[in-house]
Length: 376
Image 1 (cartoon, rainbow, N blue to C red):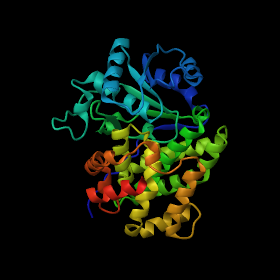
Image 2: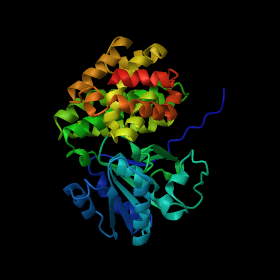
Image 3: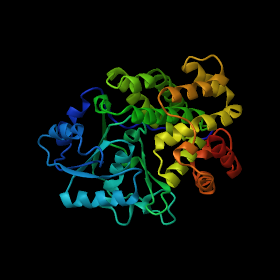
Image 4: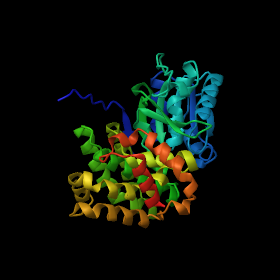
């Protein structure tokens, strides 16, 4: 048996009101000039103003240049804002896009070159060699779990292809997971991000990689999301359901250090070609891909079925479809603007994506063509 390395180092403060601990934590860490990183839609909202009011004793600058799927240029703009403020730390505040940008602003601010040169597969890959600014994260959605991840996914500005900076050095030094920050999310966002969290848990569990710690986390994350997602969508002020979904989101992101699968390869392609929201892309592909995977992982599907209250493996995908329908996400890529002329590029990007390398069933370009066509 080969040697496998496990690591779960992130400090997490979880619970209603956790955002109130940030100022004291940063001051105790010797930080006083944070750059607060968020997205353009969240910046003018009351939830952001309320959080800034809690940062007493700190000289705060705001960077709100994150929009849509995060790009390399947004990271570089954030690095310039960091240097202009003479910041000594970064606060990531937002959904997956804002957190992915905030995780690597410190890299771009302290290292030479473009952030694209630090992605893991760049032909002239630069290592992260210098100390990084102190970084804390506060999620305002329950989907990507980026706050506890050791990777940052940013898109190339020209091609929109998603690229990944991967290093434990970019992990948040502390996470403040406050479900009260998600109470204002509209149902459609709650649904899409919730299916994203569920996808992370399911795909990481189905991955054939060896990581029993992640398997246990993924199964429990699936169980928690299964009981909470409908309530979070239909009763948005239900704090217990919001807490469950935030926990499931973090559990999915912790679990997928084990790796993901073909659902994510398809979703990354849809994001690159159509700038589709990542959670929505996962929701539109998950049932098609999992149905195709069933024959390769029957025992694991039986266990997934069990944790959501079903008796048979072949009931899991129909259950997932029913859940997706019940939270208001209608299936069908065609209704989301996908056309036949998009298929060649979708297939090429999905085939080149690394996530499917740990899919339970090997994927070829012909397989991706079949999956996208079925999902239309």
